Amino acid sequence: MKLEIISAYETTFKGEADSVTLPGELGSFTVLKNHAALISVLVKGEVKYTTPEGEEKSLPIEGGIADVNHNVISVCIY
Image 1 (cartoon, rainbow, N blue to C red):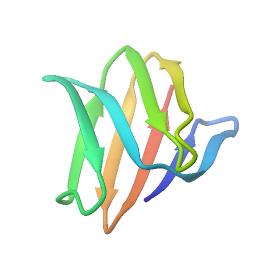
Image 2: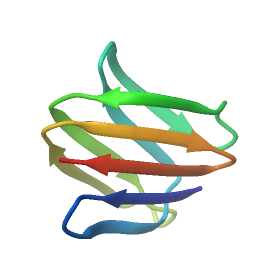
Image 3: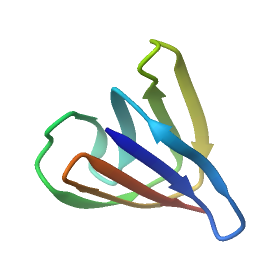
């Protein structure tokens, strides 16, 4: 899957990810390959993702919006 994490100031990450866990308004949720399309409000927490090499990374956020569509995850954070 392609993951892009952007803010008003910079692109924080752009690359491939095997899984992405996001802090949704109704609780954390994980996106895997071929996930159904969705748009979600994000709350304060951590965006966690695993690279194809198996490396686990995380990024603290204050909130934002996530869009999942056709194995592309776009995350706008603040």
